[in-house]
Length: 62
Image 1 (cartoon, rainbow, N blue to C red):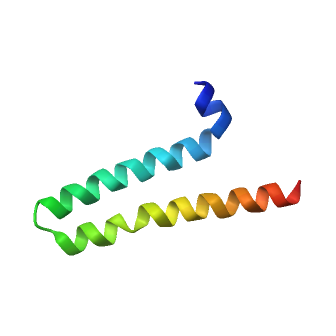
Image 2: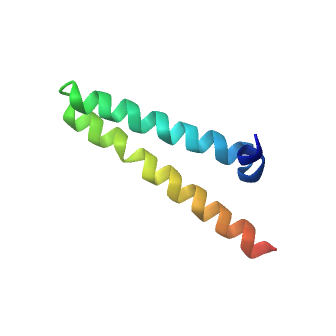
Image 3: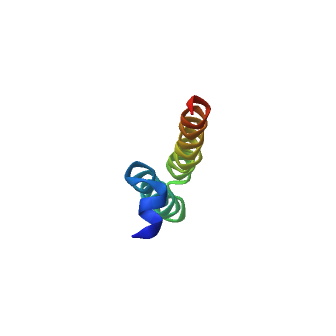
């Protein structure tokens, strides 16, 4: 719980979502849906980039 309090609820949810996206993308890739797996796998780094961008904006306003 201490880690979730440090991260914040929104960031913790985003990280869990990224983890689930990666797992599902690997499942798609390994079952033969290679293009769908690659497409879906690119969402996780995009979400992580958005998280970093929002954190930078929040820190800049302080």
